[in-house]
Amino acid sequence: MRLDSNASHGKDHKSWWHYSHHPRYLAKMLCISTKCTIVAVLALCMAYILVIVSELAQTPACAVSLQLPASAGCNRESRLCERKFSDVSFATMHNAFASSQDGFVVAQHRACIATALVQGVRAFMLDVHLLRSGEIALCHVSCALGSVSVSKTLGVFREFLELNPREVVTIFWELGYDMQENQSANDTRLLRQQLNDTMHSSQLVAFAHSQQFIPFVGWPEWPTLQAMISSGKRLVIFSDSPRGRNSYSVWETIMRDTTRQTSFATQDIAGLDTACSLGPKTRPSQLAVFNHFTALGTMGINGASTSTLEQISDVKFLANINKNPFFSKRILSCMDSLDAFPSFIAVDFWESSDVLEVVGMVNSNFYFSNASWHSAGILSVLTTLGFA
Image (cartoon, rainbow, N blue to C red; front, side):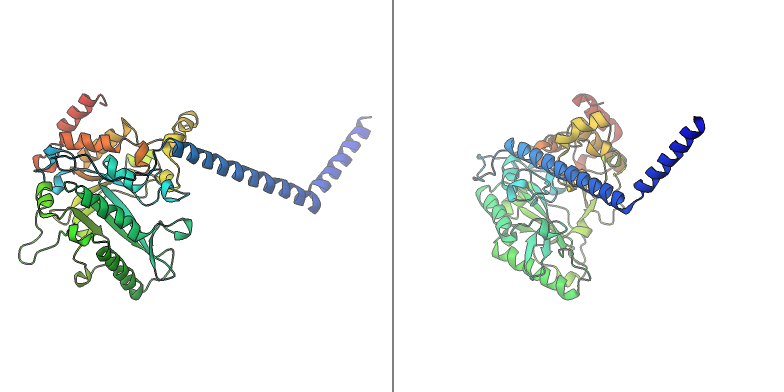
């Protein structure tokens, strides 16, 4: 009986092996696997859309009026008036154009630039791309994923500055080519020419303060906010234009000469702890840009909606980096290790972040001229805030 049983088992096993390796069976399994993958992808897409809809439902509509209440201060605060531009910290929108309210699906903010201006954000990173059509637009990496009009966006800034004569604003221009390879010198010339024409037609050039090297003098100190307001030159426009000083526009402040940035390619919350490198300071008036965002935001996912999942799964990629105490601790830690003042603190999803509070904390306790960010000072602030 055992022999018969074994023989039967061997026969069945051979039959099963033959069937499981039959092309029709493999094709069937592949089909099932493909369907499962499609269903999983669709489920994730639906979950993503539902999260966006939920977040948008909690976000006020894009501001219609850009008029702020009257104020005698500079950027709403009297204490900032006599400080140099380099001694003030500004809340900054990373890829500011890419908001859900501006029609982006893979958005890095829910609320638009207009609302950010009204709420207190004062610096904006904008990527201007030369399209294959020869026109320019604001987009990130590929304009097929969404784009915004350059002229309409600049119109928002012009209206805000006209309505609010005591506000100082900053724009960062990054030049791109909509995933086109092998850009020519002519492409760069065309992009810069179109951007220059749009800047002039927007009437923003009249507001521009350009920080430029002065022959036989050197690099000038940054003016105070009050001096900028009194002169009407209340808009600083950084640009990553290529070298060749003769090609610079009158409104540009060249980014590489006047700023240093921490990494803008940090993967997760753990990476932020080590992303406090600025590189050597090559100019006395260079300002520090503290980039406080990760790949999660670049993918259009708000850490505020994934933080609970991160706590359950311990997947650090899903962590919410935009809330205190982590946010303040990270900025203060970088200030201490770099011995640098954060002139700009850049975030994704500003509207659900503590960036305005963090900038307020920095401006209340530190500024470059008094060199107050030494370890003892930072520890004292951490203790006062209850974060130590």
